Length: 174
Image 1 (cartoon, rainbow, N blue to C red):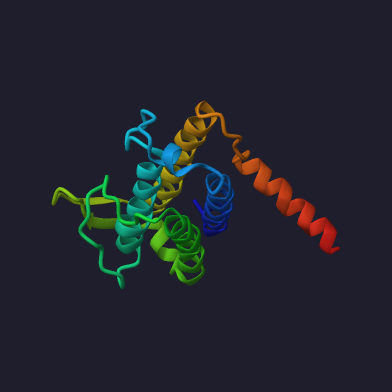
Image 2: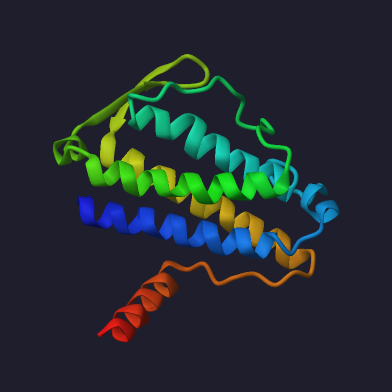
């Protein structure tokens, strides 16, 4: 995978996170915290899992200048909904910044890290980075399904809709 494609996927991660957070800002606290059968029980728990996974585990693994914080995958690291949504949106931009500074030679190499269970792993760098974004897509899909089942409307989060929006923005600017 090349840097341009990874950057597009990182931009998609920002776009989808912002759209989802806008939709979630309309959801009642009761519905956010209710057990809707997700692997992390609630929408709120799943949002915290996204924050933990992307920004407490994976970002530090790729950005070796940042030390990973020891937390569990199901940790509630942010209890305030508005602050949780803000952190998800703000931190999603870190990935594009990271890719803007990356040594492209790393993309053809491997990433070595220690799992939360203490196991040493070495995996293909680009594929593992792609996993981070795919992981977010997976859980955003779970959250939108839960929102729909609770009677809320959901944004369209398919990548193609971001590409269409970008195309329209380019046409407006010309």
